[in-house]
Length: 117
Image (cartoon, rainbow, N blue to C red; front, side):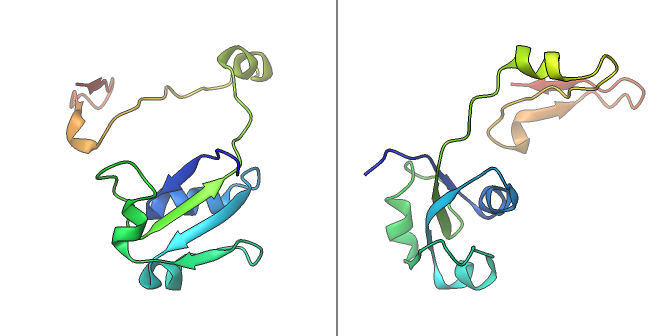
């Protein structure tokens, strides 16, 4: 059995399913989540209750009724992105945060600054 990454939550799983580079190997979902998630036909889906899903993810992770196991994507290195980008390309900054309460906006519409606690 391979040690593959797991993704959980409605938005993260939907984004993974929409990514043509992402290979989904397995899925677990509550009956409710399975009714609206659009799993590919070749992905085995196991119906589970919320407590079972909670054992598949880190403690207190908000799985929202859906967990998938995926193949890891190739690493993307910043120098590779910069070399592949055109001279006038815009590369947005990436900010990692736990939830929107961690973020504050300067309020200046002309020059917005994002602060992370």
